[in-house]
Length: 596
Figure 1 (tube, one colour):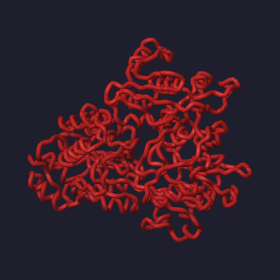
Figure 2 (tube, rainbow, N blue to C red; figure 1 turned 120 degrees about the vertical axis):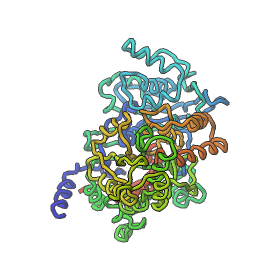
Figure 3 (cartoon, rainbow, N blue to C red; figure 1 turned 45 degrees about the horizontal axis):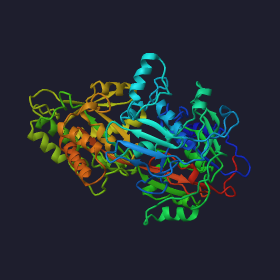
Figure 4 (cartoon, rainbow, N blue to C red; figure 1 turned 180 degrees about the vertical axis):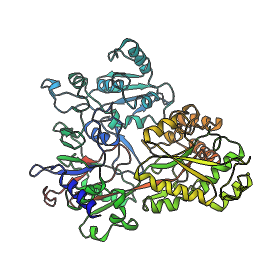
């Protein structure tokens, strides 16, 4: 322990000194993982997207206080107009919005126009960009863009000047999208400013090899310093438009109403500078916050019980005026069964019974206590908190723990211990051994121990197959894993992406279980084209029932995220979607200690 403390303190001392300019309001905190860069079309990792969300502007954004979510105009003048069939979407951009100054503009103020969004969306289809989110955007079906991409693959040049039907600037400030299929929730794509924020063509062409390190947008901040995987510094964008604080918290949201009352009408951003250190080791992040070097901390898992025992702020932190912020994250952890596996796959009653028995024998409550340290709640289905269709009162067999019932199911379908060695055999008498895929790291060990404990309790022999995560993913896509545990976070407030990981045509891709069910696939397609409402909700409930009955996946927990704020930081609320919050917080520099 003493040696570990010496190592941790040495790491703490090695943190880069983030000296703040005198009198400025500076937000200081840490990312627990390194960024990759700041070109919206070329990034997909969370921490890079936190930066791009504040440098670039999407057409729409998520209200900072509304829960579970509310989309509102950002650089758009109003909410989009769409055709009755949700295939044509038209957006009017507010005039008078300008990019941050850059030499690429040759000394002129550069106004944001509709053509900037046309160019920005087209970049995702340019093979040269190698966008990691190309396939997801292509699924939206903007007419003509994939043909443009195919032409580029043949000729070696993407024709940005060729107009396509699905993405056009009708005039200087009017943008129109035409889609191949009805997309009632296309608004969520338009609200993803961290990915689909507007870039200026002149900047990309002026710095073709530096797009990841030279972001220029219309957002509230601009990048002023970057030491890769070490330090990121941003400052207020002097060209940022006149924008004041406003939000729509729920009437019964006491905290949200108080934040709104305090800041309504204040010009944004309220702070001048953001200084980010990359600190991957948990203890130095924790110690830096305690030593008042960081203003905000996403509490590392090893320290959650020290920060908030039983979900309450620790008394020693409360005496210092530190704030506690806990949110049920729109995510779910799960394990899936390979539906093509000879032992656990298939839809025959005996195979379904085996999967259901494994699910019933999974002690999620123990996992929440021992692994998640109380920072999670049991999941009942694919629907994550804060997404459409989530009902905290919804219950299903997926959320049950009943080892006695699990044993009864195994007995009923012939999974018996015939030779008295303590392990059950298959119905035909041949040996039965489950194979659970894992990774050779410290964080995986508690899950392995729980799996072994749970399966031992019902007489099922378990083997742990270890490999590095990329190798396991490769094997999963090839259908070579029997059982694997993963976590998924919702990228937007809709449930469709969660259902997509069980959609039959996606087998071998995002559908890792290789689940194929004609009625489920029909529901998925119908839901995709329906507006939110009773008809779509009824289909969702049917899909949930199908998954619970056949159990291709066992949904385990939704995680609770815990943040701490220093007393001089005000207005913080973790964004569920969109990654934006810097412009909505305030710092009292008179109370904030100087960097030591």
